[in-house]
Length: 145
Image (cartoon, rainbow, N blue to C red; front, side, top):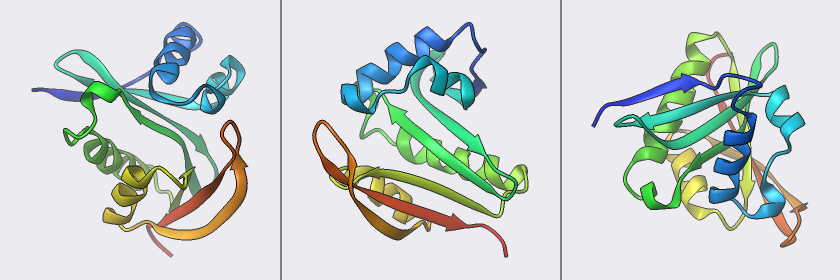
């Protein structure tokens, strides 16, 4: 199945991104329209279908991955690993020195994918998430020094 990444057309696709977000994450973790507009969002397409999305906040030397999401029916099929590999390639191509991201502490699958690609846990942030209240895990991958 052909897999590709396509930059979301903003602001035209902001509603689609918000609806997609709600299908993946708890309501309290979903982004507002303003946040989507401030990020650089990308769709992951497989066989022409949207199976995932991610979004970046760009710093001078660091790329912050603000979200990585795969629709539940496509989880466990390797799409999360493919997206993580693409995110890292994107960061390298654009000359970033490190990637930073965070996730709920209970999201063991995403933590494992990040670790598989060399991310390390920087710190756990108590009460970072709400509804339900939960610690966040901040992770980073150093690409160059």
